[in-house]
Image (cartoon, rainbow, N blue to C red; front, side):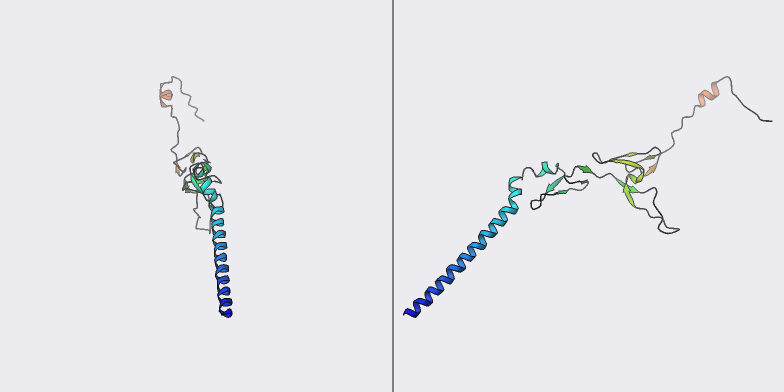
Length: 154
């Protein structure tokens, strides 16, 4: 009888130690979940404010993941339209590389509005087209003036 009590006591202590181990593991898991999810619980409403409404804050590392069209550490900048570059170095003697670049390298990209300010002579959302020349012809003045200077060289 005394031997069977010893076996029962050992099995009871093994069960107790396995229960304690399971409790410890459960407490550690709950602790880790709370620590890593705490920023999303605390700052859930600040999520859009933190990323300026143009992205979502990652709850584990606190960084913004921007939606399409925005970039920056807090999604504060907009991408400008991309177009084929007007000037680029050639790959070989007869093949030109045509990378897509903001404002086609012929304008200034305003990162806050995402709008290209094209150089003179270029137009389009990404400055991708040549603009028609804007030359003022003053034909009316030429034909209505009384004195027309014509120099004829001998």
